[in-house]
Length: 363
Image (cartoon, rainbow, N blue to C red):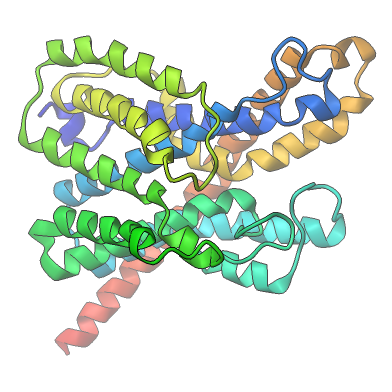
């Protein structure tokens, strides 16, 4: 394993995280084209394949959880504290901001409405029937992916508690058992059952399997160099499909091609040196912040665009470019000045809590 991997810096994976965030940004930005643009005559009315950025995130998450627990062994309790400190504070802050905006100006976001039950369940990462859209959705709608992330973390931590050395097999088995429930207990009318047993959870298994294989069996850089273009071609082709959020085939249509790309890039990270690009690395580090904040940036563009000169309004390409650039700028700013210090503070508190617990047990 090279020095880059030993230092815990997976540059290629970080670059992929930015790609995933950008895809989601573009998917949502494209939704503005028929509303405030020229209707998509040049760029098309939508980019449904952009939603596959979520699947890329899930595969990466499965890989990273195995990787970090292999590099720095921690107990299940500390693992969950670290994950909660990393994910929850920025999400809570943005969710509370969303709640404040919806109470003051309900019309700013077209597919969200405020109610106290949705706010509480959003903060607790519990899927809840939405008052604004069909099915379950948090107050910050993109938070549905974080409900799956936290569920995966809980399963992974439980697997570590049962038998740390077999955590991958146990976690994968638990996820597959959960997903298989739909085969034996069909219940299309229960939103909670549909959410928790979705086959999209299998994408975490893909990521864990990739980490297990690559850490045990070295892969020739030549093989990776040959496989990467094929993986990218398959993945790009998969983006031409429009797949529903909880479609039972999503893990195959979008998840499996994403796994091929993650496996190829991760192999480069672990077995060779991925070139350093500081801009891409910053954007990768800021990918979570970009994901959390981009709806606010896009909302601002949607409000301002009708006020722009007619010549500007006639360019859907300029609309998409403006929306994407503002979303990236807001996300990077949030990462540098809010998320990073906030997470550092939360992790420090989590470590103090863990030390206090150990001291209490010892006494």
